[in-house]
Amino acid sequence: MLYITALIVHVISIVVWIGGVAFVTLVTFPMIRRENNSLEQVMMFQGVEHRFALIAKSMVILVGLSGLYLILEKGMDAGVWLMIFIWSFYAALLFGLEKIIFEKLFSKPGEKADMNKVFALLQGFHWIVLALSFLAIGAGLWTAHY
Ligand code: HEM
Image (cartoon, rainbow, N blue to C red; front, side, top):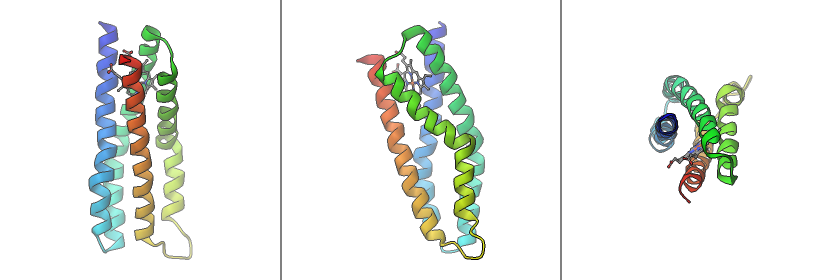
């Protein structure tokens, strides 16, 4: 019973979190980049970012905790190592790295940052994050079913 509960928590948290990453990459960034006013662009981005940050952090914690329990039940293999590796990258981003990156991108003292460039860069980065997420999902399915 505990095993199936952990599995359900694991998968639902992944759906919410990676679904959010996909939405931001495929819907939010194109909307932001169509906007001409850079102040409006930053406001839109920060609105979404602020709202999603807490959800993403909670989901990453749930994925990690449920994953640890799944290891106790099923043991380790290459697929699990890959999930842990990609998860650690996300955890580092959400709990510190992201803040440092945003501060660098959005506060350029003395010169006006080119917001179109900044958002093109951020969208590209989110594409990489989304691709890594698909890789982690593949690793999980391989581990559980192959
Ligand atoms: C990027 C984050 C992660 C993603 C996208 C992910 C995705 C998945 C998916 C899709 C499954 C297959 C579920 C099924 O079909 O039964 C799975 C299983 C599993 N995950 Fe993750 N996972 C992630 C992080 C983790 C972490 C951090 C751990 C360990 C601490 C972990 C441990 C496991 C284990 C042990 C299984 C196998 C369960 C079984 O064989 O029934 N995962 N994961």
